[in-house]
Amino acid sequence: MKRRVVVTGMGIVSSLSCHLDTFWSKLIAGESGIHDIKILDTSRFKVKFAADVHDWAPDDYIDSKEQKRLDRFSQFGMVAGIDAVKNSGLDFSQEDSYRCGVILGSGVGGIATIEEQTEKLLTKGADRVSPMTIPRLMLNAAGGNISIRYGLRGPNYTVATACASATNALGDALKAIQYDEADVMISGGTEAGITPMGISAFSNMKALSFRNDDPAKASRPFDLDRDGFVMAEGAGVVVLEELEHAKARGATILAELVGFGCSGDGGHITSPDPEGRGAARAMQNALNDASLAPEKIDYINAHGTSTPPGDKAETTAIKTVYGDHAYKLAVSSTKSSLGHSLGASGGIELIACIKAINEGIIPPTINLTKPDPACDLDYTPNEAKNRKVCYAMSNSFGFGGHNACVIAKEYTE
Image 1 (tube, rainbow, N blue to C red):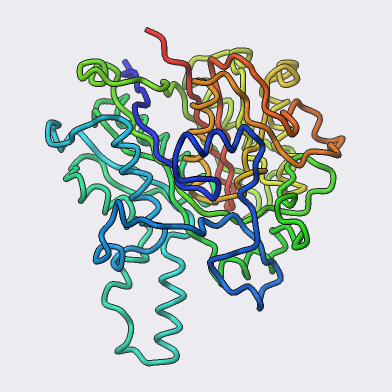
Image 2 (image 1 turned 45 degrees about the horizontal axis):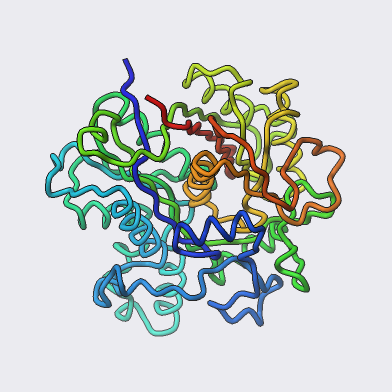
């Protein structure tokens, strides 16, 4: 029998804010965190905007010596993880360290370190490459460093399934607790891919929006005039806990995780299945895992990247799974405000789902002014809506045909 798993802490790093309450208030107000890139010189790039965390200041969390040993993506993961643990009220010195673990997701890991050290190798010679290059760039660096900070000896690994990474990580963490491998898991995703290589590669692929003249309007999920996604960076990390463990220490329970499903498209390395068959299977698998009828879902935080094929395929997939209920549930893409943080997006969007459950507010899809006729669901255009949310699904789909969905539920006894 599966054990019940609840969320007791959340931490966020995003272009809107690195403080949870401010993040949420700006998100439901329809503000955009997308602007001209401030962390890079963009004079050589075709795309000159993104959702970067331009005022990043981790000094209150990580001392200057440790910061030098951590790539930006690890710093994001560390800070979101520390905030999530603080939010949970957990004291790991009182826990069995072998029953507490970390499973994070990231798509490109320490790409900034790879670029910096490669340039140093080519311009200054092999002897100038930093001996910390590998510990900084490896995808598992963020999770490893979080486990070291708290002395956690339970399950510890990192998932890399492109833009589905965080949601796959959350699914694995959920199961680790459900099947009694752990009592507490820190999970979610982190990413810092706004680098010269990241911007150039995605723009040359024509995956990004080129709306340089109006960045805040560039991410337009489900809009007829969408022209690609907007790069973002950040982290979304939660503390998952076995229900009785949480109750025994008097924790505040924010939500319950009740279902996870995943699938593969088996079709194309970058394009989604045009009929959304893989996405539909992942959603159905999550519902099956939760033993839940589709009609129970009140809200879907869509993957909704603002690419023409992706939004259409996801809409088709939702209709396949939900039938007539697809037109009754609320859908929104928070990437319209936050941009697309690749492997971190699933962690950030699960937090948005939990806040929607806690507050009874659906965050909007901003910039949706000319709906695509092929995208005909209620995407909560431009303004947040009050709505009771008992069950929310978060969708994440990634290059390589990776699909992952997780379901959060209002906590009740």
